[in-house]
Amino acid sequence: MKSNHIMGEFTIHISKGLVDRLVQDADMSKKTKRTKRKASREPPVAQSTATQRQIGDDSVRPKSEAAPAWPLRPPVFLPETPSVQSANAELEAIRSVLRESEKAVERLQKEEENMLQKVTQKAKEFRDKEYKLPKPKPRPCTDESEACLACYKDHVKDPLKCASLVTNFADCVRRFRQQVELRNV
Image 1 (cartoon, rainbow, N blue to C red):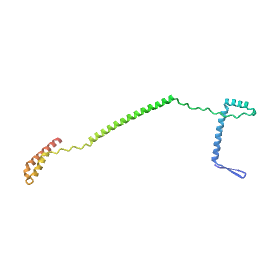
Image 2 (image 1 turned 45 degrees about the horizontal axis):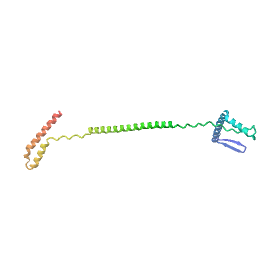
Image 3 (image 1 turned 135 degrees about the horizontal axis):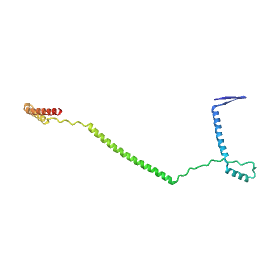
Image 4 (image 1 turned 180 degrees about the horizontal axis):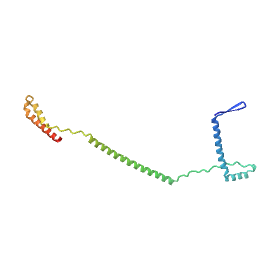
């Protein structure tokens, strides 16, 4: 916001920023004046005695002129220094909480190790049950089969000599098939 005021031959431009700063300065001066008034309302005991002394000691100054008074400052409160006993008690409390926390961490680590062992064991048991390789089925009549093969190797030119071994092998296979059929029924 700009305002133009013409004063004779001059033009004055007032910006919004300038107006805002002036308003802020006015607000700040009001606040400081209020605090000064409050300070002056209180009866300054220390000031009056100091003023009287200065007036009494100083003969050059006229009595109508008062010495400049120092403004009263609010009292400064310094924090109490903690006693050694309270500091030690606080340190002991912190140390006890720290010890309890360390014990809790150790307990949780042991629990974690136990749970890890249990999970590993359960996984191994599950794998053994679920993924167990099937046992190979026994091959029936292996002795009779080997006897037949050995006989054929020995009697390459006359295989009829192995007829009795072939009959024994065939009978063994038939008996085994009958046993399997009886189990399935």
